[in-house]
View 1: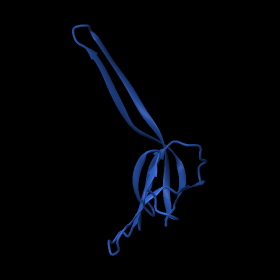
View 2 (view 1 turned 90 degrees about the vertical axis):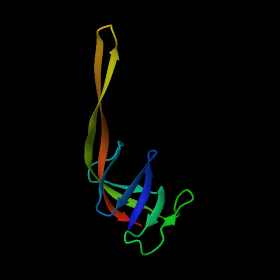
View 3 (view 1 turned 120 degrees about the horizontal axis):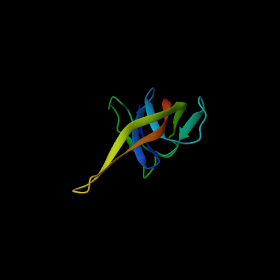
View 4 (view 1 turned 45 degrees about the horizontal axis):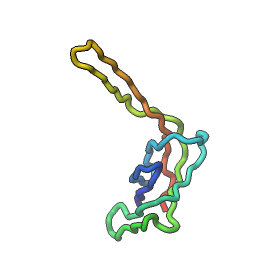
Length: 105
């Protein structure tokens, strides 16, 4: 079984046992988070039609366990002005929370 959840404006396809990174929030390691904004729920084998919400599927929730904080990839941004000898490099690394999906339903 899979679900498409909405979290902080992003849509994430998850299944039981998946480990995904979500936006940073106050949550202790080992605690559980319940996502109630489920956009679609379907069977992974494709034997039955998926339930599509308008905009959310009524009564559907996804439960996840917090594994800890994680950092995303480093993104480098360069600034350059021609003929002026100006070059600048700025780096950014987004912080996430890594969660493991416990149940989809």
